[in-house]
Amino acid sequence: MGYVDHDGCRGNMEPLLILHAVAAVLAPALVRRLGRDAFLVLAVPPGCGFVYTLWVALTGIPVESHHSFAPALGFGLSFRADALAVLMMSLVTGVGALVLLYCARYLIAGQCPVLQPGGEGPRVSAR
Image (cartoon, rainbow, N blue to C red; front, side):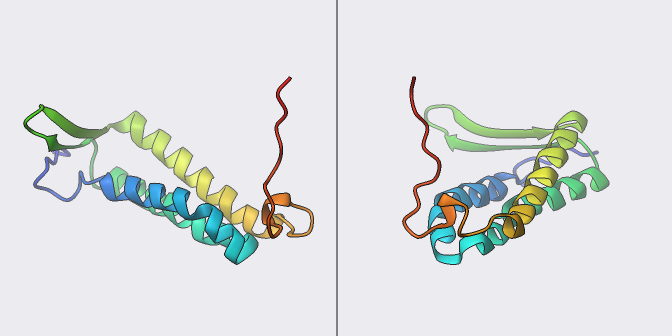
């Protein structure tokens, strides 16, 4: 019922992973350029993940996909989203998106070292 292999589109979770990775790489530059408004942009990947999770929950669980990564070596990339995974995905992506949306208006540029030009963020000292 809910199983879709590499030929179907329901099991294709890789674009979400790539979107999160791109956002993580671009986050420092976005914060330097946009200030606290960068958090609105950074809320898009978890928001997309939340919408995808709702779509999976509404269209049927489980969802599986498998793609050959290096067939000569026998490597593959496999994903499975069962009921518990969908519950956890919805919690993590939903709360993540809400936190980033909240940060967009909560953080004040003059009081947050990360948002200041040349700011390095909080320092952690080793004891």
